[in-house]
Image (cartoon, rainbow, N blue to C red; front, side, top):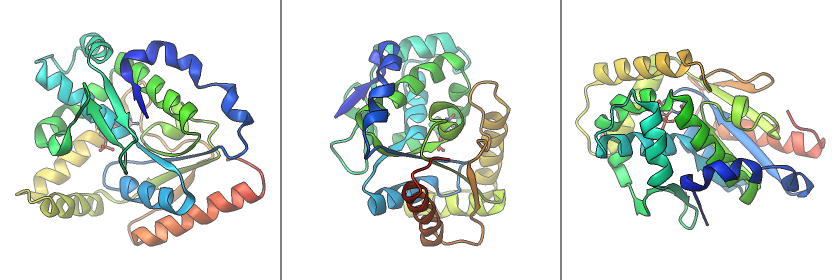
Length: 251
Ligand code: DC
């Protein structure tokens, strides 16, 4: 099942009330800065609770890659948004975990490369770009009503009515070390200082932007992950989601 960015103008309407009638509906949001383990945690939570996973960072990374491929100025939000309307950014849920596709093609590791990393926060800060991708995210939720979605604004802006919302944190030193380990596992040659500076620079842009900034959503459960293993974070989230579901309430 694929949901494309080009249909995003119409799709805002699609993510409405019908889902509310679905008693199995379960939307879990996990936000936080880079390196807090959101992607791994989201995948493990998805397995435990039989949810679909949505990695919204991959969508912004695809938009950044599109910007590079079309030689658009990363500061030109209107042109990037127009390009997203023409070149489809979509999620392929036929594979596990879902992949982001650009014009039907899997982008592989290219969206994790340093070129994308150096501009993605600038691209993601444009309200025109966010409007398009948020619409796609809501449409995805209308089609996959059992969803764990991770990013920066999922609990604050995109799904403020989610059943459970989490905000993961960790010190920048720990986050940089995790990222270095991840890149080395991918066979990359990395400079730990450059990784730390990159993380801090992206944090500043993600936190400082006007539209959908990285913030702890009101009412979200904060989990400080510095001294927790992935399994411990996942256990905590699953326990809270199950308790919320059993009590019949949302966050
Ligand atoms: O989670 P990540 O590192 O793959 O995110 C890549 C970039 O996209 C990061 O700079 C923050 C941005 N992003 C965003 O602005 N909103 C989201 N919902 C997800 C990611």
